[in-house]
Image (cartoon, rainbow, N blue to C red; front, top):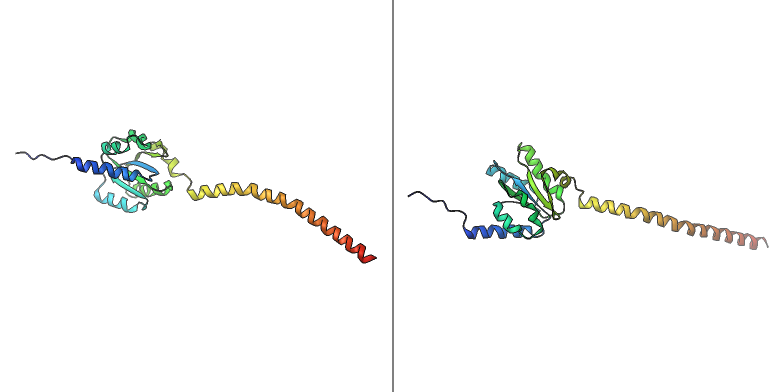
Length: 185
C-alpha cells in the first residue's frame, strides 16, 4: 500500500490559531516575512537576534487568517499568499524590533523581505516599511513634547519674573531714598 501523509491534525491547527491569538494580545505590530528558502539554521539565528519583545512564528496563512478575522489585524489579508513567517512585536519601539531582521537580511544576503505589516490598524506594504523603520522612539517623542511644552513655560516664567524684578528694584530705590532722608535729618 502507498503511504499516506496526514495533514496537520485538527487539534494542532486549533493550537496554532490559539497561539496566534495569544501573540496578538498586547501586540503593537504584526508583520509577514517571506521565508521561502530559509534554512532551519537561519531561522534559529534570526530568532536569537530578535529582542525579547518580538516573536517569530511560522504558521500557515489560513490559520493566521482565521486568528485575525474580525480584529484590527485583518488588514493583513493581502499578505496571505506565499510562505510567510509572522513577526509579533510586543513593544512600542517598532524600529528596534525591525532592525534585527534588516541586519540579518544584510548579513545573509537574503532577498526575502517583509510582505506587509499592520501597525495601529493600518496596513503597510513592503514599500512602506521605511516609515516604520524611521519612526521616532517613545523617548524621542517625549523629549520633543517636553521641549515644546518647556519653551512657552520658560517664556512665561521670564515674563512673570520681569515685573517682580521691577517692583523689587522700585522698592529698593524707595527704601534707599527713605534711609537717605532719615539719615540726613
